[in-house]
Length: 67
Image 1 (tube, rainbow, N blue to C red):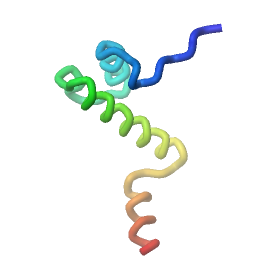
Image 2 (cartoon, one colour; image 1 turned 90 degrees about the vertical axis):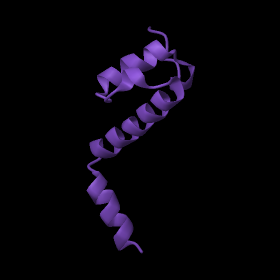
Image 3 (tube, rainbow, N blue to C red; image 1 turned 90 degrees about the horizontal axis):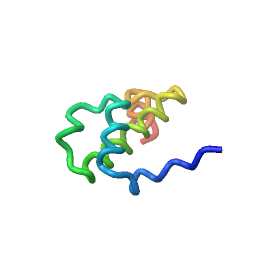
Image 4 (spheres, rainbow, N blue to C red; image 1 turned 45 degrees about the vertical axis):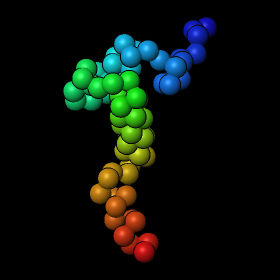
């Protein structure tokens, strides 16, 4: 059985850059660790929403309709 993946916060800058590359985050090589970590977390949340059928437009329209 393989070892569990470390949490993003525990990863090195090199590991975070590898993930950023896979996620197609632009200009990741110029980011500092905290900025990169934050950007990866946002990208992962957006991907999760998209996998459930929610796009940014749908989320915004739902927010405006509920007010």
